Image 1 (cartoon, helix red, strand yellow):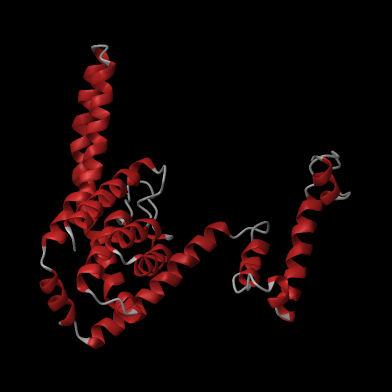
Image 2: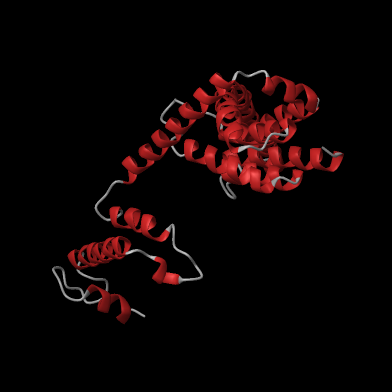
Length: 273
């Protein structure tokens, strides 16, 4: 890996750490972080594959009360670095070794998250003291310092992993027995399903179910053939979905006529434009 690539990877890691708090550009999400690491290292396709696999798992991660979810940013960046330095881009290897390694690193990242938040408790008091003095610059400086720690929380571990020789990483990954990697691949697939099921469970409403099934119809759509590539079963599902969406709109009374119990909801919507 060239020096430029190393610098860019550390920069991506730093941005992922910042976005773990800011949530503006979502760089901490696996699908983006892994893709960016793959982009700057010349393995964008493999980064997208890894990021999509980790993203399906991270869908079920959420902070609930005092319980902090695993660190998706560290999992994404560290696993992408391990994949690039390992030099094995086989799908089975990615799912069986790299993805489980990312999950373990995400759990380990909780220690760093706790440490940074502990330090930032003192930072808040320093910012309060600056506010009492009427120093707006001081308040801003301490906020930026706290944000800097969040970026370093991912950038420093990424730099440490990058410092490990590629040969060492490759030898370590090769020593993993096939039976272990195969089992981890199966377990990783199950975790993906569980994460996706948790999200569906949260979104399971009568208004959203039609769009869920609509996705299964449109996902295999051939853009060169358009709707003609949809099978008869898909057309049937599409018709049911459209009918369900129409009935839900009608039940809501439309958007422009003010009728509370019927009418033409599609016409009401079109009349608004």
